[in-house]
Length: 557
Image (cartoon, rainbow, N blue to C red; front, top):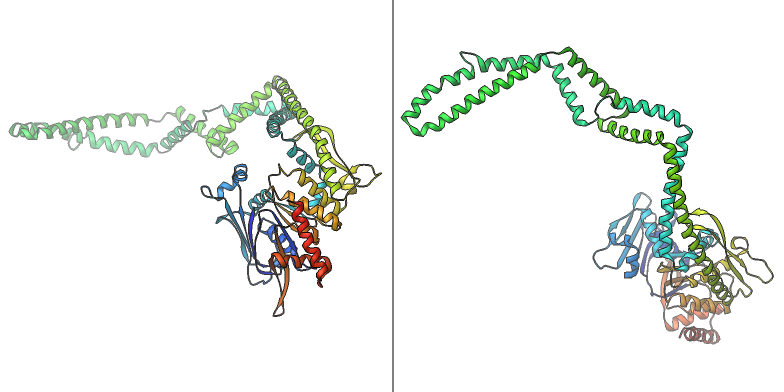
């Protein structure tokens, strides 16, 4: 539920705050007082656009803060909120501010988020029903969503979605194969040439770097040869070479060892030195031999390097990219070479998956058809109570090609007047009727609608006092399962409020501002009396107001 709202520097609201009932909250006030500003502020804090024209004072930021207390069940079904809470926390503070010359600030429990993320969260928290939202009543996609919520076949629908997804993937793959078939011969020729080109050399990075190393040695062979010969000269020179010098050290070392046994470890070290010097000499000699220039080997190294360069230029830039391109090309080449067999097998698989999806879609269709009759009965009963006495309502289900929702086109048809044929709602329904149909649908969905907060604007359009009482009663029933916020001009509806707010326009120091007052007891009676008789109230209007409150209480007891 929405527990509180704070609005600063928004429209006529300088600094306004409200704490809400978890049930039915009703806003009244004279025309132009700013009742819809509350709805606009809530829309803004949940992601709607704002411009500098909404700012009361352009030199100050506009700030709106909404606090929600969410149930455990709601959080379990909307796990995205877990990103913005700690442990068992269920309170969420959404803060949004706007300044014309500064970046927007959007936070939830102190965590930053984007406008799109905010909108996504907002759609799960509040369902707005105003003139614009009534347009969804005319959309077929909305009709099938309503019917599915009532049908209680979530498990079957998830099974269908999975089957349809696998069928769609197979169909997409089959379409790609069919596209390939039209250019098969030319593609095979191109791919064959690419495969041969890529198979000239091993494409592993180890082999590539080995070739690069050989090339570096080849290009520096003269310098390498000079360096290794210098080392060999210093090792093998009879007069100053390390090996000959080490050999001359053994005789004096033996004398030293004979005189002092503790120096024998030096003799071991000398032996190691001599062996290491001889091994180093042998290895350097072998390395010098490997540097001998072989024209054929050199040509092969240059050829390999050129090939690697060309492959990287065409399919790289790295040898890893070339290797991946080769793997993909090889698969594509094999697929094309076996296209007829692959297409045949995939076609069989696609048909099998389609049949499975179609079978599940038929089950969905059967359940929708059954539920559509129940929905028609509920809507007709609700609308008759709401003053559309001769209403006929029907959900028409027609078959369509397999899609994400199954095989059904669902559209609501209505005839609000006696003797008129049923037509799509978009063709005949008025704005006042749309508000009542929306209320009837919400009543039908009362136990399955997952959105915790419902906001109604213009729900009382084109209805009178008696229907106001009926509408108020239905809103009260709706508020048993949902928190409801409502703007109304009818005292009959206002009398059902669990919390009654009056939106007041004030003029102070030549400046107009809007504020909120919570009406209790006598103040509430006075407001209902004003709504009935105008600003001049009398004993009769006061008496009627008290009776109206009593009637509302009795109807819900």
